[in-house]
Length: 216
Image (cartoon, rainbow, N blue to C red; front, top):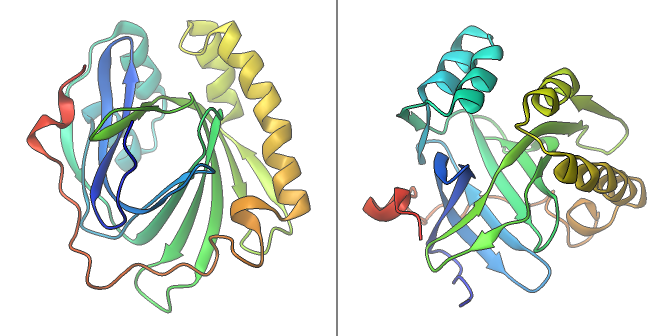
């Protein structure tokens, strides 16, 4: 599969049971053997389940799992807001690392967010994965971290959204992610990590291509 070029649009899709769950337009920062790195700023286009948008606006997270278990969801428009995002996605790994930056003030790193997900599968335009419900929220200085959505993750396992094979992979990935944080390596490194990134001001806001929902 060809490498993405810095500055071009790539689309992250979450795909569940051969159906697109979400699609997010991102700008490629770099594409190396170590990781695909992508970013976006407020205004970037995405598609998300209307149930997810409802849960985000109301705080009712149960609607997300209901939609996944019955396979019945519709996609709605969603625009990225409030923060700039840098996403580090290594090949063959069951997590990505997301760095969130203040997009309204001085642009400083506000938090790290480790997202546990299926390893990415690349195509010429997109990479497909699936969010496995569990997250790890990390302080900007790596001084503490907290597990997020463990109840939802356990419920997702009971409902079959997260399989036993996926659960075992996530358990291994938990240890890998925590070790990276404790050692301050990879995207968390003080030198050469992601913490000092700033969006390129001349890059246009990424837009979703018409083919974003076409499954190969």
